[in-house]
Length: 151
Image (tube, rainbow, N blue to C red; front, side, top):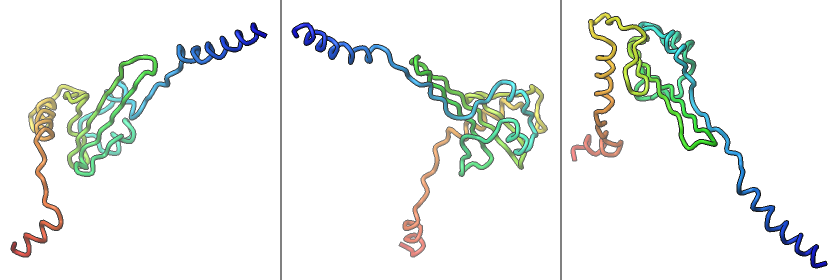
């Protein structure tokens, strides 16, 4: 009887500890996978429809900047403590692809200057300056009505 009690206590003490030493962590993958091959197929001057065909539906379509699409990718390996992130941003003017940013750095499919004579890197730097500028705080509905009443 004593042996049976000792074995039962040992089993109850060891079994919960076994689960603590080895467990599975799932990989977390979110967003758009954009490969270098896909990026190399992009050309300045492509229409939005063509870019959509090459890269797919963007992860983020900013309602305030309709001419900008963001393709965001995030991967966290379950067993590793590191994560992988990438962001591709494409800019359009008049339904034509004008600039590409890869991880906030200019990406040029070809090094040729565009019609205005500036390189894509210069245009992307100008875009980054615009994005870094703080947004103006807009007045709310009631404040605008109050101002209209002359107060």
